[in-house]
Length: 209
Image 1 (cartoon, rainbow, N blue to C red):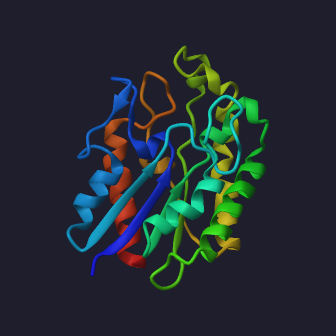
Image 2: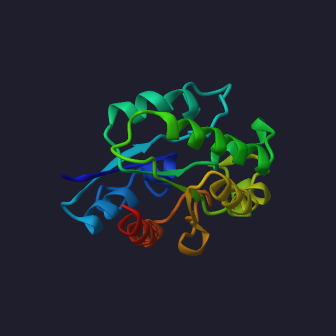
């Protein structure tokens, strides 16, 4: 029986490619690379949406909060063995006026809700990933201007997410050591980062599932 791994995230899980303004191919996206690395004993399920937040409703774009989507998402992909959740980059947008602690509290709400959804094959197992920080040059990029002042806040997420993971008995990974941003919008992963990141996720999945 294949083990089912759900990957919940934003545009960096969807696979946004700043060079083409499109999507990286399956074999470049970290979810696709993860599937290849894990092999036939696993099913990797992509649930990436550009603009997605933890819990914040975006006044400019519909359906961005992961919170109301979580139950139908988990149940539609049941049974699940593991969930990787990497969110928080969009929560740093200036228009949300959220602190890093506020964003981590949103992550806390998500994982606490996920744990009680009857979608798990056995026990709920969740990996919280702190996304790599947004490069400060993003704040001057004409293609990423909607973010506003966001880079310093994004740098604080790792510490807050680690606390959240410990308090809620989740696995934890800081993506920063393995990921770099592209040289166009400075807030989306370059192709090489997708591969490096997938290698780290593979290690955790094999160890935990």
